[in-house]
Amino acid sequence: MHLLINTGGGDAPGLNAVIRAVTLSAVRRGFRVTGIRRGYAGLLNEYPHGLMELTPDVVRGIADRGGTILGTVNKGHPFEYPTRDSGHTVLADLSEIVMQRYREIGADCLIAVGGDGSLRIAARFAEKGMRVIGVPKTIDNDLDSTHVTFGFDTAMSFATEAICRLHPTAESHNRVMVVEVMGRYAGWIALYAGIAGGANVILIPEIDFDYDAVCEALRQRWAEGREFAIVVVAEGAKPVDGSLVIRGHELGKEVTLGGIGEVVAREITARTGFETRSLVLGHLQRGGSPTPSDRILALRYGAAAVRLAAEGRFNTMVSWQPPRITAVPIADAVARLKTVPLDHDALETARDLGICLGR
Ligand code: F6P
Image (cartoon, rainbow, N blue to C red; front, side, top):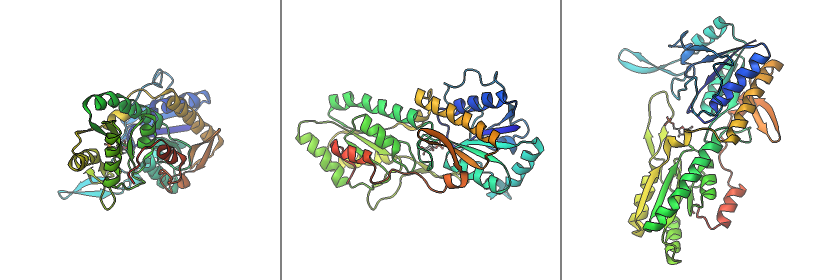
């Protein structure tokens, strides 16, 4: 059997562990593995130089390394590929070229390691006749049909540590520190890191926030003699009747969120007079070595993907449904995003701990 593997979308700690597990599990079965560089670029403009033979030697010692040895892109959607035409950038469907090269290589299956965007692309290739197996990756943890995605634990742990580091400086200066974290339209990183790091206010995309409630919670702390506070805001959070703060929008790419932290900080200062600073954790959340938890999950997902291939269970996504690693149809896995349910006990926990959720 000849397996292809690519990594798509924003990188997440654990991608290299998946690549290692796929390669070792495949080679043990006598399968061949070829890595495609930078999403589908290795089958498009970088073909054939963008193909990389994966052997045990190539994947030695990479499980604890962040990033991906294959490279990744979060633009260059093969069904809507930005191309120049008469001086304009237009979106072209290059999926047939990918299909043709997949056949030319003699591949039996593509293991697509990605988040919702990349797995949606894989699902569309499955409809065109490619045999695919998805592996759920994203720091955002917003993929449905799996208990958790790899990358989330590392990002959430980093954000927690950052929040903990802000407490002493916030207290020393009697300041409000506003920390913006990633997560796109899901509040998992903000909610979990905020609770674990002892934040006083947590603002997530699932609950539009009210500045009156946020400022009231801060004034209350000051009145109680605790004249400092940590506010965690997810990049996709927005005020009631307000809109998302967008950093940019490139053709052929999802909008880039970012900037809400500074907006919230300015509004808090204007309304309360408290000295406020904001910071954006940004891509630091995607860097570094995967936590042991993410590493083991990524290795389990990678090995499971090869088992699925060996069993001929194609057009599926590896899924962790504790305690088992199993598989779900890839089309079902990308049908909806997993945001924080409003009845999630972590929200109740936050309220019970006296954390303001912006309402
Ligand atoms: O999906 C992962 C993620 O890190 C999101 O949390 C964030 O909104 C986005 O990717 C950032 O993308 P980029 O790498 O293009 O800035």
